[in-house]
Image (cartoon, rainbow, N blue to C red):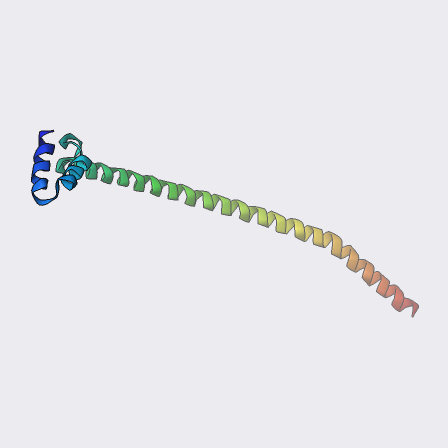
Length: 112
């Protein structure tokens, strides 16, 4: 509290009384203010937090890249299976159709 009164008295010399009181009230007590050491500790802790987050982010990215590769491989396998099924379906449908068309064409040509 003594520091607040001293600050108030010093500010009152250059500012008006109301402004000096407002500044002192906004600042709070000396115990509530951060020191240079407090700020350095906070900076170090923040840097550590950032490094941990960067490492975790790198791990997440690597995990996602592996997952993308797995999904891509699975999709490639399924697409190959689907292509095989479609080809079998086409053969089973169109070969008899072309045989029937060819037979009909031969029958028409024989009658003519």
